[in-house]
Image 1 (cartoon, helix red, strand yellow):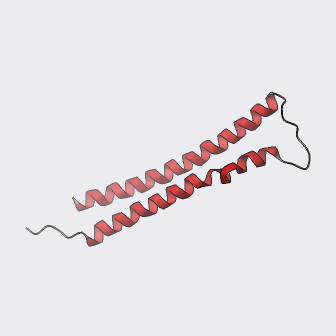
Image 2 (tube, one colour; image 1 turned 30 degrees about the vertical axis):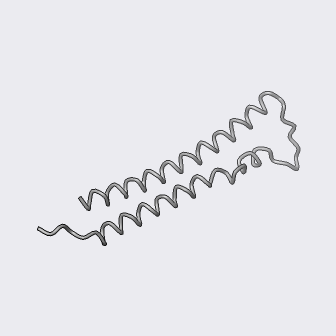
Length: 93
């Protein structure tokens, strides 16, 4: 039973990292689609001294908050896996 919890924690850590990277990709895709839509509708006035696309990508730190939270969660899962693997006593026969 101990190894089941260790494996589940490792799988959860991998899943969290994957979900975090997907959230960052979704943020970047949304920023690009907003920029493209503004260009298409001709509501965007672009100036040579200001990069609108870069500004949109930078909103909310480029989505890196989700990635940081995912890495923290993955670290907690891996720490839990190590704790269960090393500290949980084996049942006596």
